[in-house]
Length: 406
Image (cartoon, rainbow, N blue to C red; front, side, top):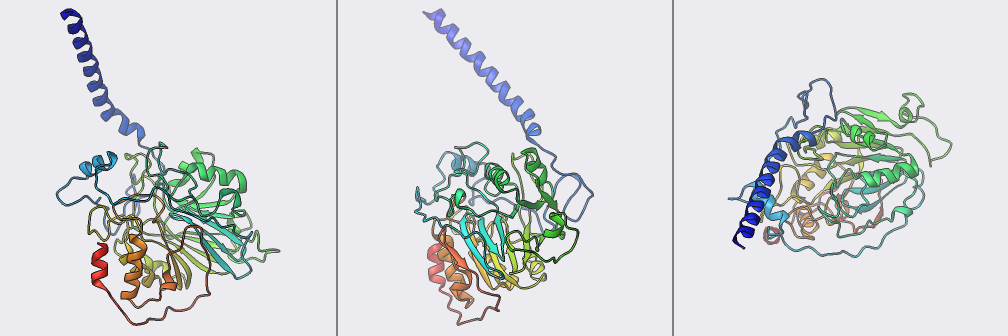
C-alpha cells in the first residue's frame, strides 16, 4: 500500500512539475503570440512607429486605494470585488424603426450600450453595433448584457453606414458586424488598424487617421464631391465622416495594446451634424472643442458610464463620468445629446442607475434643461429637434444629493 501511495504522490509531483513548467513557458510564449501588428505607418504625434498613444497623457488604470490593479482584477474575476449589485435582467420594449427618416429629419434610437441607430435624412447609421449576449473573446465568459437590444436585429432597417470607435469587445463585435455586412453591405468607417481586424473576418472597411475625413460620394465610387444630388433619400451618399481625437486605448488580447487607434467622429449629413464620442476619458478636454469647429452639432452621443472602479470615484482615465459628460456637452455646443455607455454591460463599480441619476444632478448644476441631454430607455426613439443654442436656466447644484450617489 505504501508503495502505491508513493507512486501516486510521485506521479502527482511530476504532473505538478510539468504544469509549473508549462505555465512558465506560457507566460513567455503566449503574450508575443497574442500580439498583433494591425497597422504600420509613419511616426506621428500619436503613433511611435509601433503603437498609438494619447498625446495629452497616457492612460493609468484605476484600482481602489491601497490595492494593486492585478489584485483588483483577480477579485473581479472571482466575484469578490464588492461591486454594488446589478439587476440580472432589465425589461426592454424593443422598437420598430421606420425604413428611414424624412428629408431633413433626424430620429435616434438607443439600442443599448454605445449602439445607437441614427436616421438622418434617409441615411441609416449605426454606432459600435453589438447584438451579442457577451462582450468577450470567450463567450459565455466576460461581461453579459442585462438588457436585450432595444431593436431586434431583424427589425433593423437597411443600414447604410457603420461607425466603429475602437476594437474593445463591447464596441467591435465581430459576430454582429458579420451579420450586418452579409445582410446590408454597409459602408464601415473606423480608425487606423481596426480595418485589419475586420478584414481578417471578411468585413471590408475604411480606416482613417485623426483629422481625416471621407465623403459618402467617395465611398460609393462617385468621385470626391462633397455634395451630390440623389434621386431618393433612402440610398443617398451625401454625407461626410470626420475621424477625430478622443482619449482612450485599444486591445483585443492584452499584449496587442494600442496597436490600433481609437477615435470620436462627426458625421455631417443633410439633416445636420452628428457627434459620436466613442469610448473616452477626459484627457485634456480639448478634443470636444476640435469637433465643435466642424459646425453646429444637432445630436451628440456622449458616454456616462463605467467611470467608477472604487467607491467615490468620479472618473477614470479611460472613461468620463456624468460630470465630465456635461462638460463635453458644453464644449461641443451641441443642441441635443443622448447619454450612452451605461445600463447594458456591467463593466465597473457603480450601481446600474447611478450614471443617469448623477447626470441629471450635474445638468441642474449648470442650469441645462434635462430634455437637452436626457437619458433614454433602451429601445426608446426620439425625434431630434433642429439645432438651437442651449439656453441656461437657474443653477441648482444639490451637492448633498451628489454625495449620496458617490
